[in-house]
Length: 193
View 1 (cartoon, rainbow, N blue to C red):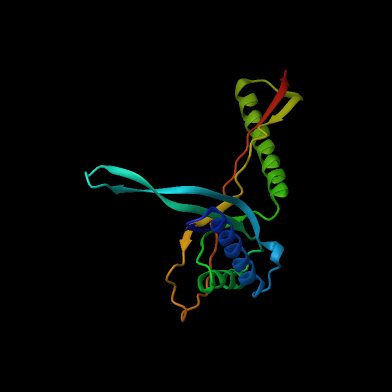
View 2 (cartoon, one colour):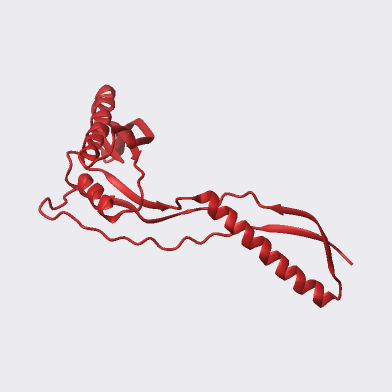
């Protein structure tokens, strides 16, 4: 995310565009395409600051137009590429605040495995309950699952600010994301005898 304050609205728009293009250029220098950086949020708003007047009362005074331009870039989990990206952010023309998020590369496969395990668990528990109750399971009448959104990401760093980074000390990172825990609910209804 790049952000700043300009005295005029048009200058805020211009500066936001310049900052985003500078980030795209920095990432282009390490092998990314210009279109790899996607805008996920953009805004310009009037910003005010509180000041005391001669009577000691607080007054809101116009400070300028604050802009924010949020961008994201996605790539396979690779420490060398991540280090290059972080160095591009740290030592580029624009100081940006950023975060790192790891996503599951094949979420559909994970969801399907999760549902398969949930059904196996339901079968095992239903079998134990039926045995304890002295009944037997017959045909399955219905299977339903939650259709809920499963969070398939882990964010080890939500906000890093490289303002004042030491240009003589490029970083080499080795980040191993924590395991993602996911759950889903499956309801299986059997006929019993």
